[in-house]
Image (cartoon, one colour):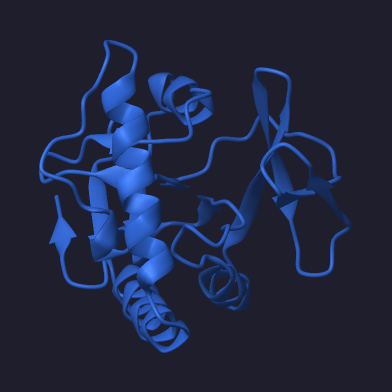
Length: 181
């Protein structure tokens, strides 16, 4: 547990050291790599999150996906549960005070998207990911048969991310510098 806290602290310090200009350039590179990926091109529906300051920006890719006619789902959390909510630009949103992220107010769906974009705090070359610690995305991935991709800044890469038996990895990690998987 201590090791995970130390990794989160280290990665957050690296992210805080990035300039606004670096962040813009890196976000553009991550978005371009994602939009040109075979996973994106073949997906008809995508589950993605509204990013926070410590995550690669997902808003541009959400806008692009909607323009490309793809169906978008955003997460909404309640207690230990995460729900997929269909999203269109301009849909009403609410701020989740626990995570300081906007969540949609629409009705949850049982539909399963082709592609899931999952968040992370840190990752390693073996695509092990460290999240925020509540396990929402690990539980989602446990029953998910589609393709999962994580987006990250290269600053979020670590030598080794410790995992437990319930931790699940994305199939692909896309950073501003590389694609893993």
